[in-house]
Length: 291
Image 1 (spheres, one colour):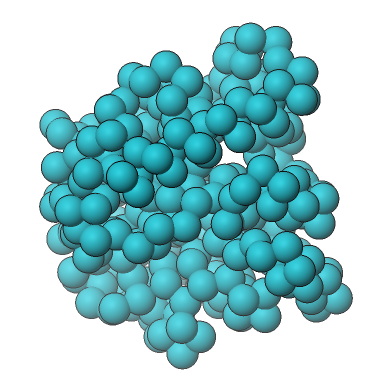
Image 2 (cartoon, one colour):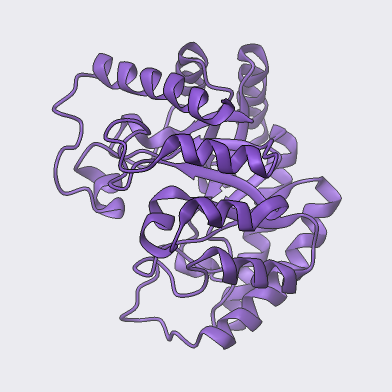
């Protein structure tokens, strides 16, 4: 297993100085920095090459996380929207190949978060459309040797994939070795009868794991989840991929609005305390996962 974090832990806006962030996470002891797919989409070759060089210098790998906007919705009834999504994600995959990022993760089968007041929730039809798109996208992913891990979300953020059982069915219908599953402890806490057994059920189809407490604090901050049992479940399936923290403690800004953080969860922490929190959490998480 390798351990990482999303870039947004330290801020309240969906933006980042990735060169600076590479050095921060390397100093803390992470193996992986999870970057934003849309950020990568808008990078030029020079920016990508500079980020790759900095990651190589500091021993940091990159995973790429997408919460697509509605204009790229693979489940859309509008064929032009689906075509736009295909062009968007194929561009991202090629830029990932230049960066050396081997894992695209997130709700790439639709858009995030779903606006239920505007989106028809005919699940069967959405599956048919989005599976067809992912079958096509998987060809590019296979050519570039990149895995796409589809994130299982809770009922308030999507209607398409909300538990491990249906995710297994869904990726089976896509039928590509490069399309697998992302489970997230926050979403599993809401939707799974037993999140530890869900990990075991995913087995070799588990391509990525997001971790955080039930209220999105850092692993170990309140132990609302049995992290020792998470580790046992991962070892039971011989999981050897990324375990990436996705904590959100700070209210305000774009991040607070998108993640629905309406109160400060950090204890009014200083930047130095935020660094210490995540450093301590990484030590704890590694101990639980590696045994």
